[in-house]
Length: 132
Image (cartoon, rainbow, N blue to C red; front, top):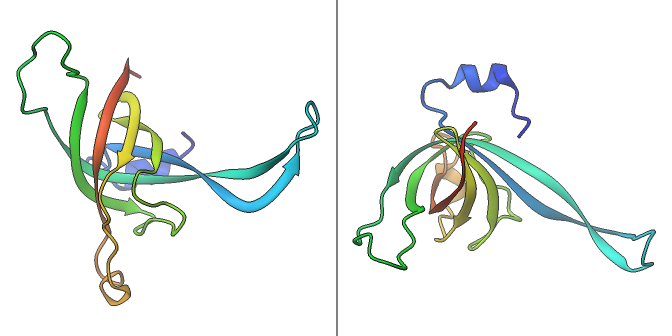
């Protein structure tokens, strides 16, 4: 993730989540190896303040205990890019742990509310790696 250290410091201690969504730019290019047309993508990054809620089930055999429900607000940028929709996945670092974030609910706000509020986000965070 390449969110500037100064930006992270500006929002400390609240900015505990970095999210990097890969989105299609709307253009395509030709793969030099295969000759196939492939969509061009870019990474859109966000800094957010989130709370993690552990799963509400018991840790029985076969139960995935690496997932957490996430609820919070974007810090910078304050609104999700319109190309990011329900089910979009992001590489994420939350509280120093690497993983994958999946946006699971539609949180679109009316435009007039975006001027003074940071957009809420909700989703699922699955821990993949230990602390950085």
